[in-house]
Image (cartoon, rainbow, N blue to C red; front, side, top):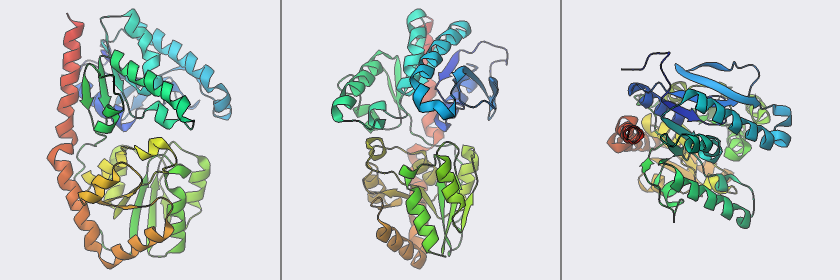
Length: 378
């Protein structure tokens, strides 16, 4: 039975964002089913948001200073130190049994509590490796990666979205490793709508490095292609760019269930990542699993680590990043043979149903939390 609203938060999630990510949200729901009364402890990134509210029925508390957008780059280091101090104080006040920290920034903010309350347990959830995100020479990235790996060994459990993230932690092996793919609750799936036009779903963070220009050039040059865009975090100039395009609908921020419904209305789910960034080449995108769950093929660029699996198991398409001719040829082939997209979508749905659904993954999370709780009681 879920814990009462005024019960102690035995499970607290830490990430310096304003709202839980879909990955946080699903793990929070597992905690709620276990009666742990989970709380998301995030950063105060928007002056219009209250200090406490709910997101999709889950409690959210924002702590630390306001991250002022106009001076974000100049003050981010100081703001983060202040956030980490505020997180420690909040955790000491709340007294959770388990702290579930996202990425290295969240982990560092939560580690002081683990030291001060040694009976508590710490989960390190690696959405993205910080070293891979940095635009820096290898000699700068290497010590950051080593720190990330070492802290992964210190944590009581490490959650990763795929085996590549786990291999990146070597030579330090986590005490407890849990592979939790970025897969959604089962949204069901609908038959593919007729073509033309070919309708593309572009959901998630709106950035130039995620294929925005490729999609814009495509829809601007063809009257048989439509684009559905949804996203919250990202660049305003990218949002403005999409709003200026023909045959493009910009929906703004959507919840994950809403984004999944949008995918069902489309023929192809776009997941493009500029390979200049190392983190992009190693991406394990939510959109890949969203596409599989909704029986739609994914469009990814061939430089990503997952592209070989997608093409080899025939549940999507891959083109080189920035290759307009290859993308144009793919569109021509799909309009000529719509069944090719439908078949790959069905293949992805079968893969989702045979081990990649959230129903199959959630017991791993539940088991890990239960083991950690038992350790706090010894």
